[in-house]
Image (cartoon, rainbow, N blue to C red; front, side):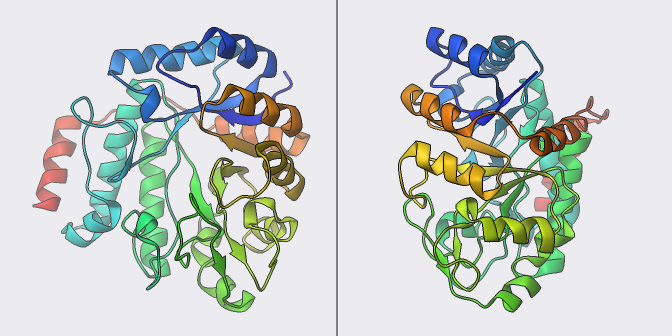
Length: 329
């Protein structure tokens, strides 16, 4: 089956008639859900099943469920978590706590039919890291961040959920919020390679990744990573990431041009998949049209990633919860 090089976010709590026909015809690689799509566990199970039914296959369903501020599934139906950086600083055994946190998250996701989570983050905390990102991160040094990101990814995989490494090749130096403006980093390429890009190089075996909407002026002063062929070559060749690369959300204001132009530029630059999240039907149609069919290389990467989906390993949830509480006491 030929798939469209897109992942779409539905509009609401159920699939609309228009979405049902559009998804069936377009065949996006998968879907992503947000708080607007989530009410109760039963409702979310119905939605994820309905999304897969529209395309007639076991399509991946994604979410941003980092815990802390970026958490789409919330109380009273799901656990609440500290921001990741706060947890790393508080836990008596930060790496064990990181694994347990994300194994519990994976169990909650798998229970409602979500099998891909947009985490871990391998960006480094810097002096100027914007507050929208800072406390979502794991630390300021490369070994800590790599170890914590690996714990996160391993916990997801053990729970039947695929991890998405973000934000490639590193967003930690950004002092502005890319949801609202375009960050530009002026560090030299050698410094970036030795520091910012290093965690991603160490984690380049992960099967899925997400770009950062950020300009590195010493490499490509004219385009953010998502739409920069030069930056995509660095990701593939220097960082050595051969997993499926999706854009961060095309609706973020760091990108310029129409939504269709953003999608076309991302695919042309070398992204495998474009991510459109806001549920706007007119925009979805425009994005699907210009994104086109997945390339053979993108399809190979997607198949390789999705082949890692498996049934969760058996765990004792109450015992993990008790250990987690003790680690944070």
